[in-house]
Image (cartoon, rainbow, N blue to C red):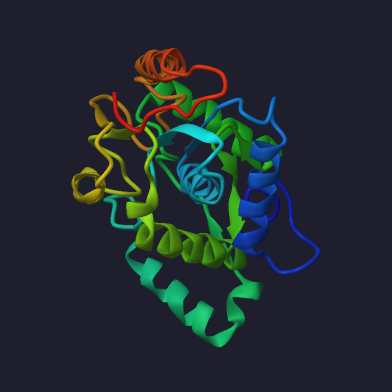
Length: 231
């Protein structure tokens, strides 16, 4: 997302721009009646859900991988609550949050590779070594908005989350999942990863789950008709 992990925006970060950019891509993809399956990891999953709410006609399925709707994981520093002081005072523009071990990765081998990249290039497969606090603030605003409107989602939904996720607990995700009224939903729990499930020990299971979901949702689609919200 521009201004969150990819680059620094000239203007202050605004999650509405992130969502609108995603919506523009969705709406311009393929034929007017061609279905789109959206997905994302961590905050990208929250963004995908936000876009799905704006493009309900176009979105046929939604995949949330390690969705972060609340910061309550075991790997977060005790001082994380101080970020709200920056939000309230406007001092957030002067600070950034440094990524720290385990970098969302349980695999020692992959983590070692990430640490090397962070040292040499200040970024890696898990993102940049630092995230501006202003971007984190906007991410939390998006999280709150989407969390409050999750009941509006009416497309097939797959959530993948690690049992040992250090950013957001499985219990929080389970509670969110249970409250969703959509009938066609699945929560896949991964047993051997941390937050970055797409590159960690369970990455092959993630790929298989994603393929299975896409194949199943796509099989229900008939050109010119809507994909049902339940199978």
